[in-house]
Image 1 (cartoon, rainbow, N blue to C red):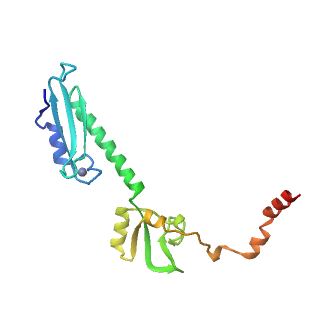
Image 2: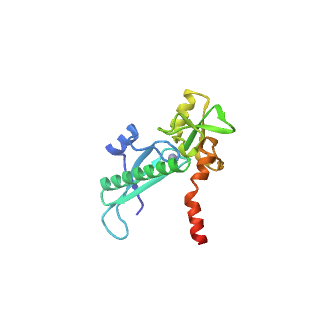
Length: 191
Ligand SMILES: [Zn+2]
């Protein structure tokens, strides 16, 4: 027996009206819930309810569904799937490709780009390890406030770093006198 589509109930109407479900993690559009019932599934005579939450964007078609013995259980299951998938996808997107460094393009240090620094590392830094990371929204807001602040995707910049030595942090005398542990290792192995 095929699935019979059910009229929207109060919960489904409320979802359509208030959009309280998280937006689609793939395209950012809203989501709708719809339920159906199968009155005679093959294995058991008891009806089986199916709730599906799907993205409103027909070009996206993201959806989750849940089958349960009651409509309410199917709805709650579908909501749980949708919410956890949305959270999971958004978290992944942020960690993989949605992080940005912010360049202060008003000046450079030598040829090095100047980045907004993390708290406790001064205002700006050339050292990416101390650079502050921004989400897309944060980076965009900062750029809107001051055009010379330019967002760069973290992955792009990370692939273009090179080891370099800052002359401010080296001292020849310290380097020679501080070499004792290495000397003693050498003499130990030579003995
Ligand atoms: Zn979508």
